[in-house]
Length: 514
Ligand SMILES: *[C@@H]1O[C@H](CO)[C@@H](O)[C@H](O)[C@H]1NC(C)=O
Ligand SMILES: *[C@@H]1O[C@H](CO)[C@@H](O)[C@H](O)[C@H]1NC(C)=O
Ligand SMILES: *[C@@H]1O[C@H](CO)[C@@H](O)[C@H](O)[C@H]1NC(C)=O
Ligand SMILES: *[C@@H]1O[C@H](CO)[C@@H](O)[C@H](O)[C@H]1NC(C)=O
Ligand SMILES: *[C@@H]1O[C@H](CO)[C@@H](O)[C@H](O)[C@H]1NC(C)=O
Image (cartoon, rainbow, N blue to C red; front, top):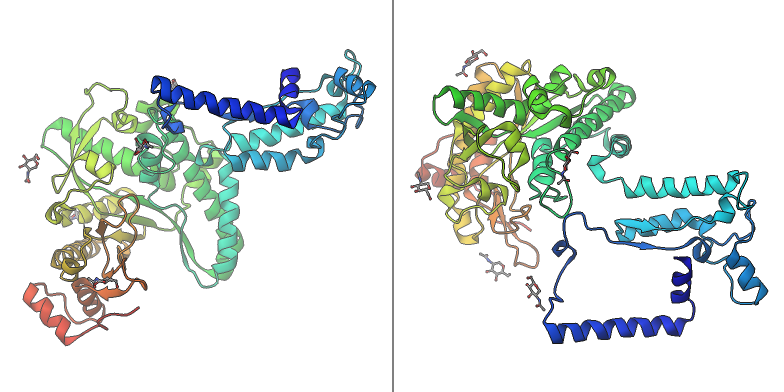
């Protein structure tokens, strides 16, 4: 293919002619047959590769370096005194930069050629060790960049640990609580099973494999966490005295009916949703049920890894919003496009608040505020009891809990349903603590209205509203801010709406600040 490539790229004018011709053809095609010219790469089939290429003679240069002998091209152009590839792009020396460019460009694949007279200078006989080393280096560079794929590659363990090292070193004198991975289970399921959250991989997505990738990613998340936690213990713990935890998205659960099947479904739900991660962190391995169901698709911890992961989390971070009724779905046929993770688990969930799994998973929350996360404090209490009883009562921090409401500045200020929600959930936490749960903290999500991931500005969780049309993004306290502030100052926890209004009058916050 060197010959044709060479011909294309030689005289500049010809290259431009070619581009013109190409554009003309495209225009004619659109006009004449109405072909769809409006597409993105996602219109192409799953796994379709887009790459680019070079060839040895056209890119490498170093035509007589490190034992390379002339190829037919060297001889041909030298004898005719034509432009030559003696140096060309000097890829022989600049391959690392060029691979970086390929990565930045976003190529899926790269095509190149190997110079015969660099690898085996005499055409047959001894291999040129320097030529061999060049191609080994080049291919290594391509593969290590090209096949990285984030959390799917174990290399991320080292890179993540190095990133955490910088955080510990630079901020660890002041910061005493670190969470390595946020919502690890939902990050994995959303990003690699359903594909509804970044990086958007799944079996029916543009790329991905829902039957294997969630389990690989979870494995690497756990190993990266363990490696980071070990680094902290070895290098920082003595001087900085902080702790390193892990966080999961903790859906509250109960069986749909009291049938034996639904009870067993709840057990599987606990295994797949919680023990998938808390099992290794507490006991050094995945639950037996997962091993049995997933078989060889579930990665295996070596003895050494198991010891590193076990006990590597100083606390469990709980992110709790949703409550669900769990039903058995083991005999449901698996259809392409179904969630493989849920099929493996063999359950279906009905969320409290009567919205559908689709609405939850696609973040298309229903339009009525009353349906946005039913107040179900039993779910919070149940999660804390379950963690206490099943994982040796570890320290727990509730890192997120709160209620979304429609983003409407006027309505938002009197967010009584939010106050009721928070009051109920904090009461549930208290109940669990009184019954022995080692829960040590509660964080309302969110302090102010934010850009909510995937749902944008349609819904908000804030104690303070933010006017996103205002040039200074003006903040104003909602009722919930007044209520929480009064609670924090030890005033009261009473709830009746009339009383809350009274509370605001007695303990006013600044009515707005910028
Ligand atoms: C191209 O397709 C997108 C998505 O289907 C659509 O929103 C957009 O209006 C189309 N643009 C043109 C120029 O047809
Ligand atoms: C996913 O991986 C499994 C196991 O390697 C394989 O059998 C299956 O064909 C893959 N599916 C897709 C969509 O690539
Ligand atoms: C739940 O939704 C279904 C279907 O939309 C509806 O028939 C039912 O009345 C709803 N239940 C409640 C308690 O809102
Ligand atoms: C309180 O804790 C005990 C011991 O863990 C447990 O058996 C019991 O079910 C808990 N009570 C509630 C209401 O969860
Ligand atoms: C938000 O800010 C805009 C721009 O200053 C203003 O016109 C609007 O009245 C504000 N909305 C509220 C509810 O204060």
